[in-house]
Length: 515
Image (tube, rainbow, N blue to C red; front, side, top):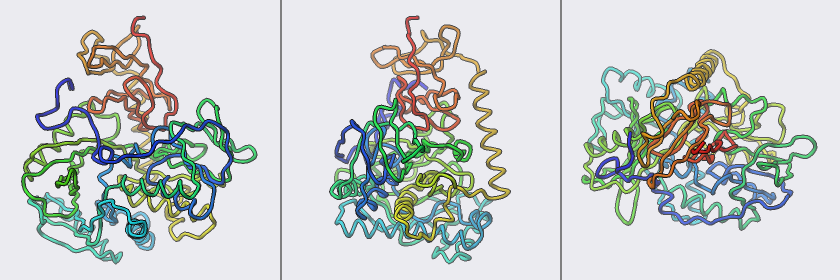
C-alpha cells in the first residue's frame, strides 16, 4: 500500500502513541566506562524499571541499561489496561495447569494491580488512575458456548466475575463476563515517577547502550555491543522483551511475536466507561483516556504475527471504521502499534533464565498484558534476587515445560518459523527499485540478490540487506511503521537498518544503491 498520502481523512500519517506524546522523559548518558554493581538490569520498560525501583529501595546498587531510550518500547505503546481479565484465558489455564495454578495466575495479576494502586497512592503519582469494570464479550451466538465455559472457569477459580447480557456501550454482545474493580492509567506518567525514585535511591541509568552478551567466566560481566564497556555484577536481569540471552533456554522456539494496533479517537457519542475486549476475531479493544482536557477512546486490536502481513495500513483503517461506526469520530490525533511476545502456554517466563544459570534472570512473554505482568515480574525478580520466597515463582518459572498442549504448540511454532525462513529465501520479487514512489518501501532485486529498498519523501534511496541479523530470516516491509520486520522472531529495523526491536543486536547491512 502506498503511504505517500494520509491513510484517510482522519488518521495521522506517522505513528505516535498518546503516552509518548504527552510525557516529558529525562535523558540519560551512554555507558562510557566499566562499572561494578550488585544488579544489572537490561531493558527499561515496565518490568525493568519496576525491578530496579524495588531493588534500589532495598539498598542494592543497580544499573539500568537500555539499547535505545527509556520507555520507548512496548510499554510506551500499550493500551494500558491494568486487569486480571486477560481475554479468554482461564478455561485454558484450568486445562493446562489445573485449578491451583490457574487460581494463582489470577491472584498474581490481582496483586500486581493492587501494587500499582498502592504505589501511585504512596508516591502521590498523577497518572490518571481510574477504577473501571472490565468486560470480555462474545458477539457471535454460535461461539457463545466458549464464553460460557470461560465463565464456568471463573466460578471454579473463585474469580468475582459477573455474567451480563448487555454492555453499557452500543456494542452488541450475545453475552459478556464483567470483572469489577479493574483500572486504567497513563503508564509513562506512573513509570516516570518510579524512574525518578530509582535514581534518587542511587540507581544508575544508561541509554543508547546495547548489551551483547553476559560473560559467565568468573564474576558475571555484562558486555556491551562491540565490547566497548562492561558491567560486573552479581545478578543480571534480561527485561528486553525478547531475551538477548538464549544459551540453552531455546526462547527463540518458545516465543512468537504478535503485532497489534491502536488509535486514539475523539468520539461524537459520550463513552459510557468500562474496558472491553472481544472474544471474537478480529479482536476489538476499547477504553477511555484523556488528552488536552477532553476524552478520547483508545480503539485497539487487529493482531497478527510480526512480519507476516504486507498491508499493515489496513489494520488502522479497520479500527477507524469500527470506532467510527460504534461512537462516531471527531478526529484521530494518534495512532500506534506495538509488539508482544506470547509463550507456548500463554503464561509469561519470569525467573532464572535456565536451571543452570544462577544469577541470570528473564522476564518475557507477557501475552499482551504487560501492565500487570511487567509489574508482577518486578516484584518476583526483586524477591528472588534478595532471597525472599515468592508464591508465584514455580508457576512462572522459565524452566517449565508442560506436556501435550505445549509440545504441540512448540512443534507448530517451529514449523511456522521454518516455513517463513524457506519462503523468504525462495519467494519471488515483484517490485523494481525504479518503480518505488516517494515514501514507499519494498523487497527488490539488486545486483541479482534480494534487498530491502525504501525511497524517502525527498526521493533518496535507502538500500539494505533485508536478511535479519538474528537467525537469517528475510524481513518484510511494514509500510504503516516504515520498518523492516522479521516474521520469525519479531526483530524490527528502521528503513536504514538500525535495530528497533530485538532479539537482533546487529543492524541490517547497508548496501550501496549505486553499485
